[in-house]
Image (cartoon, rainbow, N blue to C red; front, side):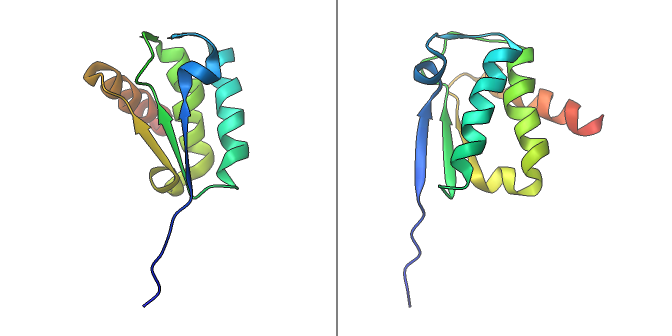
Amino acid sequence: MKKMTYSSTKLDLLELAGTASLLTRDQGKSIREKVEMLISDYEIVVLDLTNIEALSPSFTDELFAILRGNLGDSFSIKIKIVCPKVTWRRLIHSVMAHRKSI
């Protein structure tokens, strides 16, 4: 039986954004565009919010919710989110659910 291997990359959002405050739609769009380019090269893209200090609903919508809309069902397979803050995980899920219902 052949063992399956998955290629993945981990993106530190602090490094990508150049700041620990992810607040604007422009920041979210910029990072989303980078993620969308990487998706074709990797089976899994890990988005790491570990070093982030501030997260807004606008940024969350522009990055996570629009990315989920663009990827559809493959979002949960291709995108993994590392987010140590429970309140931010709730925000991400809430914003994605809201956009999905629109």
